Image 1: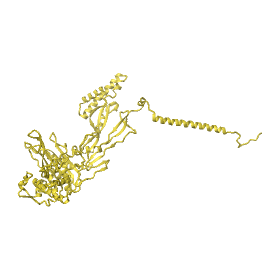
Image 2: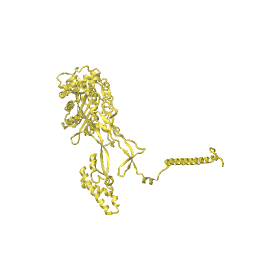
Image 3: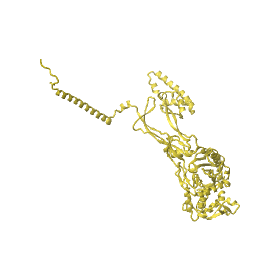
Image 4: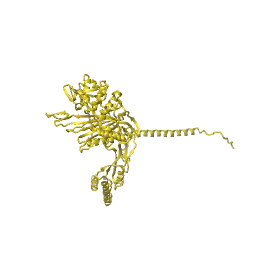
Length: 627
């Protein structure tokens, strides 16, 4: 028996190991190549493969590119109350053809006819509900429209007017509309509709649009800041569900919508309401009024707290139709004498308001033209102080003073008026500011009597906004502030951009001159043409102004000519009162202007005083004026 030996390899296995390794390597290489080919195929498919359109349309719901309308920003009053906002409304449409084809193709024809009759019966019930809801057609008329639409294949019949969400829910309880869209035919389109909680109050300042898609409005803040309020449209793809609803299908080409920003204005809605009511009442008290405007301005900042514009419409009612306050430029009349007096004081020609000048018995000749002044004609003395001349609004005194000191250098006088920004077109927050005109020597409007005419507020064209800005500067001790309407752009209550008060002229006059002018304005309301304001709840410093308005008429030769009075004695007037209050601590400056119709009647500057007094008294009663 042979001896058994262990631990010693007697068989050569190296060749077997080599074969296994080779087999594994081949398998590895095979799968590696397969993987590479698979990867290459995937890349190829991704880059070049295009499925059969017929197959694609059969397995994939068609998507539609839609525009997402942004939400229009809200316009707010100074204290945050809403002046304009957008709310969702819903326009109802109906697919009159739903289920008609299915009923017609039923194998049981009688059953199909029964189903069709049942659907039409529900349509009659729907028609009764629609008639009761919209009250624009009878139930029979609604039913005939649906029946006609079903026969003609109308799949998008408009029904009634836009409704709010509560009304929409009630409509969904009506027959057919209480079923799915495929069975009842209800189609709902959401519309963001613009609403104005205070109706037409400050309409010419706020503006008006029906919805965010409207782009033709240029009026007020809505028009001037349309881009900011509108926002930016978004883009998304939507596909149709079985319930006839379109749902988003997310795609790389989608663009997020950006809602419009809110705008906070300087308007105080309480002051606006007071101003509107006072102006409206005064207009209705005189049938000779064409319309009028009023502006209330914050003295320190130039912020417009109220702006009202009312014009008599075809029905005889005052409405916010035209923006007189910024859009009508004309001769301001005697309120312009403040600019003349300011210039005389600043240049050192009037050192004291008690300085006396001759009355010339109310008659004064300059460059061969004689000017009369009924107030001086009645004056009991041969001389009159400058402050008394200002108090009674004498024309000849200011004509004389301007010509005496500026006849040799009228440019000096005109340059000062330009410094007061009376010829400047402000970069205003709302569109429509009329171009002011202050002619100088060498201009077509300049003549031998232009200087005395400009001194009393004629031969110049300025808006009520320019006049109130001048008076506000006097109230502000010579610092002229730019009028503005917008305080900030906001998003979800956070300020995105703030607009600070802007100085137009840091000093149109010295503080001493401003104090002197205030004393002259106080004299007007104490014992002059504005003395009806003595009973106001707080002291007012202000000035009246009467101006005839030039108009076009036919001359004797049949050609048009511009006149202040026609052959029948008809004329038009502009009556202004402008001032600030309280006089000893000015917080607000206000102007009221009325325009008369073409008639033989008169309209004087004091006409606006009752409305001005009402505004001051009501603001005082509401603690808007600090003692």
